[in-house]
Image (tube, rainbow, N blue to C red):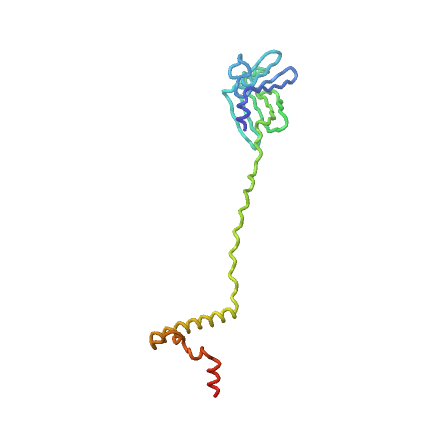
Length: 201
């Protein structure tokens, strides 16, 4: 995300405190008269380099980025001989941009800036939409339960067919019967009532 902000090297940030103006430009010189100067301090029309591109450190802690630009001009004020450094704290802010000085240059030659920008905000996390629900396969219909009476009648019919086929084969091939005489017990089936009457006498 910080790369998006750094890539926008056309953006100049500036803040004024009293008669001192600070300017910041990412990955480019603020002006061509100061080589590699990315942070400048202007006081009473005197320009001094606070930080240069050639000495940059970047650290990320949580959602904040901390960028240090070192190798600035020497801070000769009050007898100090330190080189100035710029410390920029970059925070996410969706609605506005703001560049401010949290702590002006101190005895150690350190200037602490704070920059709020939407360019360093993480994109919102999108949850994928669930796909279409697959149509469930209908469960196979179990076969209907066969009743006891169905089994009984099927056995009777099967026994009758076996009786007829085996009896006809026996009478034809063993006894040499022809035509209707091949039917087993032909005399009985021809006139079962008469057969019963004969047995009664």
